[in-house]
Image 1 (cartoon, rainbow, N blue to C red):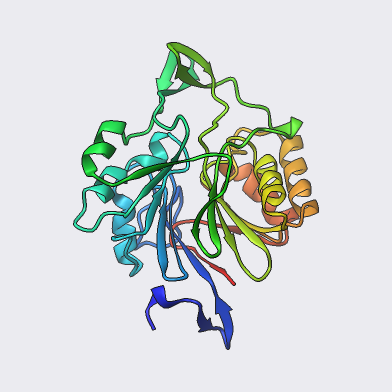
Image 2 (image 1 turned 60 degrees about the vertical axis):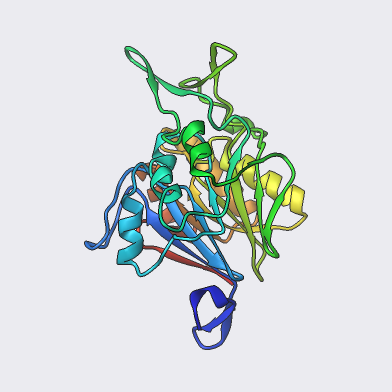
Length: 291
């Protein structure tokens, strides 16, 4: 039975609805696989295939081949937000022999983005520009505050607001809007939501709006508990108090499995490893089953 004929039987009879394969991430425990700062995930299930982010370069395609997976002909390319380390391989995928059938981005995705550094502003914008996307001929859909269905048990959601006071926007992140640099509140951040037998799973690229705020809104919109999170938590520069708060809050909200990676940071990962029973390091080559 092919991977795209799921749900399939595994591990003695349980049924798997989705399989998430990490194609690119900052670290790898497998010498066959390349690690780069960034993120790319392949999601397969219900007869569909989604690519979520493309890392900082086309090297995620090398890892896909090494892992025996194939992002070609995906039903959708989902770009979580407009930063270089999530979009660098998008052009290669869009100009391949079998490109995705559609691209999904959030509102304001193509606006110029910056990070404040000691001697000014460092541009960190998307490496896929609007013209290249248009020339590819692949249709693009903007995701907003209402869920966009990708299948029976898969949706996209955007327009997240930071609602938890512990997750205030960083003044170091800015974007160009109407000719002015303003603090970036990441209105275009897109999360992928999958439904399994346990409840909902949330996939997020960086969670710039705050992982607690994102999980809270998903649970509110769908009226169901979120049981699993996969992706970046953007705790890399967080202090001890916020890391401990986030760990406690996610467990209080009912999260059972936490596949954190990318921008989470070593300090937060170490804390989760000790204090979050369902934590696992989601590095290159990790496969997450949603049942």
